[in-house]
Amino acid sequence: MGGSVVDREAVLAANQAFYQAFEEGNLDVMFDLWEHTPRVLCTHPGWPALHGWMHVAESWRRLMEQTERPQFIITGQRVEVVGDTAWLSCEENLLTANLNATVSALNVFVLGDGSWRIVAHHASPIAR
Amino acid sequence: MGGSVVDREAVLAANQAFYQAFEEGNLDVMFDLWEHTPRVLCTHPGWPALHGWMHVAESWRRLMEQTERPQFIITGQRVEVVGDTAWLSCEENLLTANLNATVSALNVFVLGDGSWRIVAHHASPIAR
Image 1 (cartoon, helix red, strand yellow):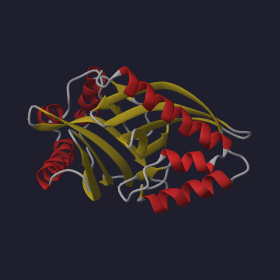
Image 2 (cartoon, rainbow over the protein chains, first blue to last red):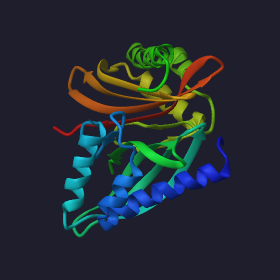
Image 3 (cartoon, rainbow over the protein chains, first blue to last red):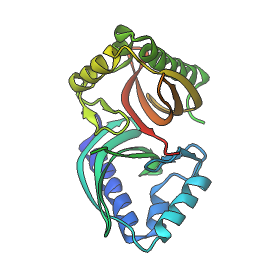
Image 4 (cartoon, one colour):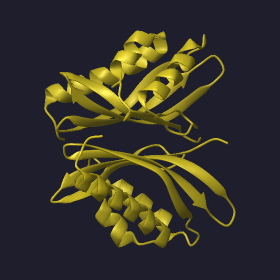
């Protein structure tokens, strides 16, 4: 496994903050976790990829406005660090009033100004 | 956009070789494009993530044994390079006898021994 323990722990912490921000509807924290650049991308389950911070931010604004946000139980986190880049895979176990589902996610982070920020999030439902 | 033109072109070439190998059922080329390490992961559409080269290789062996492999028209390739890591997003437009579908893909590459090799592939169907 590449990367120092410090880097790996920092990426795991950023990943946990990401799901916590989503669960709590905390848009400020969510926005701060992302790199605000044209190169970021986000693929929500079943969606095409959104490119660029402007489009990605708008999608989070809309998703997090929903009154019924899912609860997440995150399992199977695996993080790899190469230089200033990291990728992390995990399962998002979603609990809502109407639906339980498991989503496979791949998140890519880049270290900049001392913080690991998300540059790519790709989530897709696991078929039963 | 980070990375030299040379790096970006090399990642794009590896990505094209990946889909061509799948289309042609060329397991040797497919295997050579991947890093053969425990840290690789692969999420086929609707599947949970497979971890480690042994499991990833077995999935490709089985998928590529199928006599009816899809044809791919790859669109919207975007590549970003940070140091020795790159991520590439694209749409896989699949044509088979029975089904046309579009899949959103995120592929992560790492440079080692002069070659960009796949460390993560995540593909998910785009809902119509």
